[in-house]
Image (tube, rainbow, N blue to C red; front, side, top):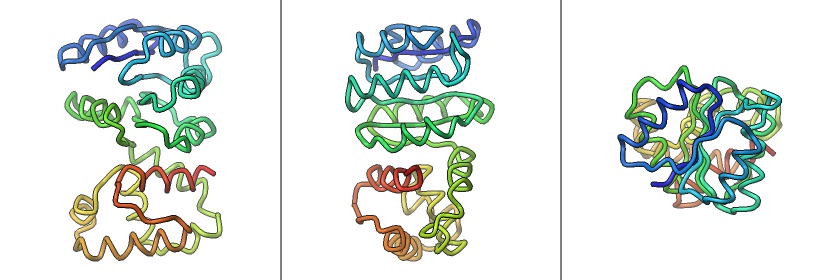
Length: 214
């Protein structure tokens, strides 16, 4: 798996390179600023980009903006954001683009190497890997939207778990209910949000996120 990494802290960048390469990934380039990230992504066209949000020169949202622009030039480029912050505006734009795998993890909530590596592989394969805190912030921001406000508390729990990339079986285990109950809640959610049903879990999650981010 070919990876482009963007992280401005030298020690963390070196640690991530070693971690990725120890898990059968090839870091084709590691950069520390937004312009270099855009160049690296469009030049190498890697299997996945692992990017921080706040990079030089502005230390605001350089990483996310570079990743979004790269996806415009390389449609379907998988992007995994690894940051301390939830940058809501550009996060919504990234999530609303359904043309490739996407993930958003918070650095201080990645508790072990396996969790991180699994997320990298999942996003590279076209899937979704979302930190529950990121999902919660996006949901909270839109809590007053009329269609979202029509959801029951249980439906909101199911929606949040869906947005994390969980299957119906995983949602059932998390909420201690049957898969049949989860399926019923899911159908209700799609109906209330006006979203078409799909057998593809990833497209389902991205459709929900795209609605919330719209």
